[in-house]
Amino acid sequence: MDRQEGDKSALLHAFRRFLAWRRRQPALIQGRLEPLDLPEPLIGFIRELEGQRILALFNLSDSAVTTSVVPFGTLRAMPESGCPAKIHDDAVDLPPFSTYFAAMTPIGAASPVPVTAAEGRPSTTMLAV
Image (cartoon, rainbow, N blue to C red; front, side):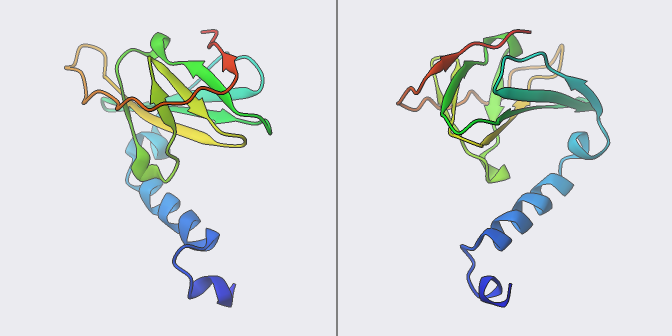
């Protein structure tokens, strides 16, 4: 651990940055949890509190997965979580054992800033919601 303390790119510091980001997301701390019915190897949920809605998707496999995000409406990627993913054509690429967080447009609210497209497509999996 002492070696990681001095290395700002070490996993220790990435985890600390993630935890600090998570503490700034009221929906992730205290929000209502809505589990999603997703095909393997994905799991996910939506957390919502006082208008803040966050989509969390997790790829539990050792293979990359591409999945549609169309069922979730307008999303704004949250790369500040430290969990960036490639977004393209209403889909998200999840590398092996990765996570994707996105802010969802609250019901009845204006759309958030659209997600930026990126290239590249691993295997394809569609969400079943």
